[in-house]
Length: 167
Image (cartoon, rainbow, N blue to C red; front, side, top):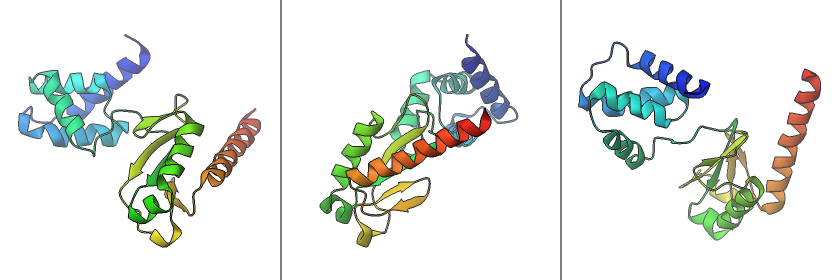
């Protein structure tokens, strides 16, 4: 058992302490774990199945059915590409492709260095600024591939600055 697995299991057990082990509590338990851990790791879902005395596949089925649950760890920076009608017409799919190409991940995934996670949203509500990408709650208007490169460059420069300051 590695350190991450041990840590996840311990945190999950601590969350489960004091809760009733009724199957009806599955969704609230998963919500609580995700709130604490940021996502639902496989080791946590196994602990939940044991706690509720249900098959692991039942926990996984619920976690994958509801889109509120994440199965991958969140990145340090969250990127949401709007795919609403206005953004789609104005090139939201092109913006999404640019993010995918630059980050080498798809929607619902996190970069291996856990710096960024990428996903799509139905609508941001900023249709006049289409196509829109939301990066860490900041709306980025007219997010074409050139703007995607600029946004990523600014994060890279900020990260390099922080690393210099820490050394």
